[in-house]
Length: 230
Image (cartoon, rainbow, N blue to C red; front, side, top):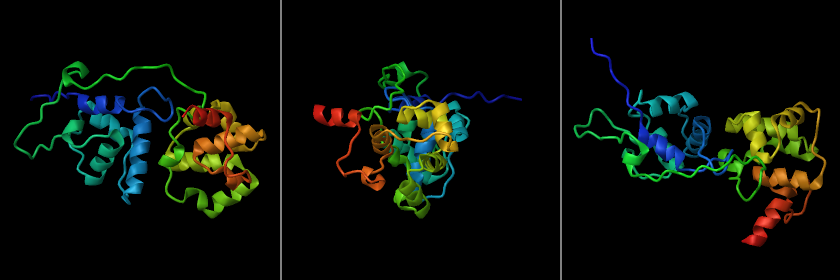
């Protein structure tokens, strides 16, 4: 009895490593973050398809060579910035012509991304707004508006994490807090009171400061510095 030898999908791995992480800018997204971003894209497509970290793992290990869901393949192409399924190493076994995947990143001819140290400062110059992972009209929901009126960032953080799939460590990395502080904010043991800090978090989350009672031009120091450099 022959044993099927799995071959890693190097094209997909390289495609993931060629895009920038939202959580750790300058580094590629983890499998979990990729799954989160694909789910966000599926929502924008109006699709109810499922896509989890486990799906990413199976695809990268070569256990699955052809995602049968058209929406999933489209979402992956959009998130990873490629034009075809072949660019992601996907091969439909029903097709006659074989698609040969490269064995290594060097053989693939794809650029190998440079690795930088993890950034955890929540700098707006390097953070892709979390609102890209949130459904349209997220901050217009009655429960969210109530939390905004109260400046209840615990409720806001929990809602953001629930819809994006980010854990406390990942959300903390985006806004510049450690996991312990995110946990205390979510539990109500600690709040946000410094004006610049509140505006900073609002900007990072893609939340217009005026929703919190600030002027429309309100910006955190990091964002203001970025605008001046531009």
